[in-house]
Length: 111
Length: 113
Image (cartoon, rainbow over all chains, first blue to last red; front, side, top):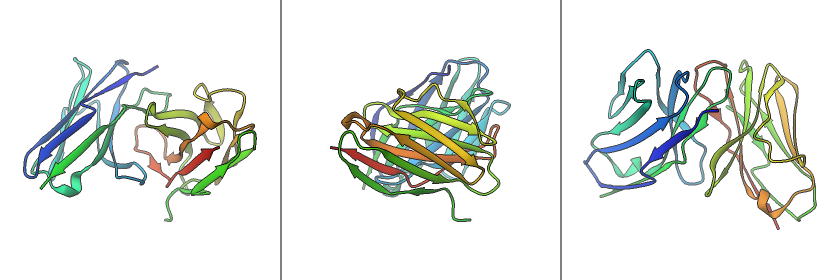
């Protein structure tokens, strides 16, 4: 099955700086790559996703990039704010299977 | 839409007892997923259903775990007998299927003492 690796496990940035989280996947058939944000004690919530026919997608301060050849994808958050502090999960979907999640990145944005 | 509804929100039970977790997916979503979240193992898929039929239960830890989906609006995850290592947050999620994101419920925090 699919195996998703996520790095780093923790990330601390100053307010206003950028944050980058990287993931790799193993199944070349994977075609859907969502990112979830989970605040403490809350449910994971979808923040952005990208499909295999697209290389980059942007939504305000958040962007995702996908490199199918290298089998990796990344989340970029610009102009970080304290409310961006949370655990972020990447995931990959192989056809016929369920989403396989990375282990998460705990992002701390300090004022 | 009320989203994915899970109950109970918290469950504390003694080792050996039966535990039943419940989930109501979003109306119109035909795929339902049960995940378990722990610090050590992250979000692990336990089982998922498509049109009420179990598709992949390879993540179910052992025979103590069972899941059912008797209709499109209800699913249960049962642990019998429960053990302390089952302590975790159990999330139910639903989707329209295919390459679309999942909507998660609020989760059930299970503590087995």
